[in-house]
Length: 289
Image (tube, rainbow, N blue to C red):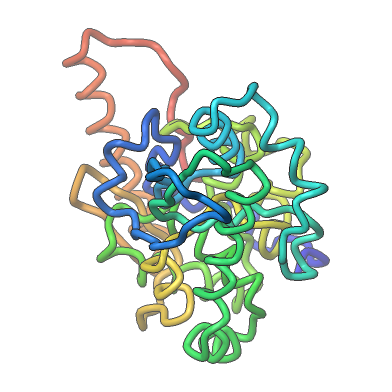
């Protein structure tokens, strides 16, 4: 899916720009799915570890390190020996398969055991008939569906928008257009920002969906069930672009000209906000052309 040259390289998809990196799990704990799993040989009452929807693997590793009281980096180093039951397409990378949920942590929990339960939970969630049938309908495999769901999780302004964001992704794939998602660039740069500059869209990375066709090589975070439902059952529509003009107002369109107007309104609102905040610094939002 990355062998073609972009045919519409001047068209850029301005995304919602939702900040996927959450400083703490407290806010997202409300939406996390509780998984009643006990880790092996736990006799003491377990504490809980909440993994919010959309967290990247690096955030999950850090949270596990902290919950288990082990040195930073211990969980990531445990991956090669953890015998995680990942699909072959993952190539041993658990990104996308550390399922967002609230997990109990006991005295005998280890990084490997915690990661294993997360991956096993994802496998159960993603191997049902609804997911596999949805993947078949959309002419992708399950791993690609998880990748799409991870982008939906990062891009959608609300659960109500997820189905439309999914449709934009599939429409662009079907038409041979680059996805041009800012969320994949943020992943490549290991950051989260509302602002993407033109030079960011030129970085040399397989996650740069401005210059490379098709899906990124792996998921860009760990999607929840709502995002997976959207990825397997996208809304019906001809949309190719979307942008959140202001909170609660995400606009989808098939017209590039209309998208330009929406982006201009987004930039106008953003500049007003900066003026109200005393004109703080930061990158400027790229202009679509």
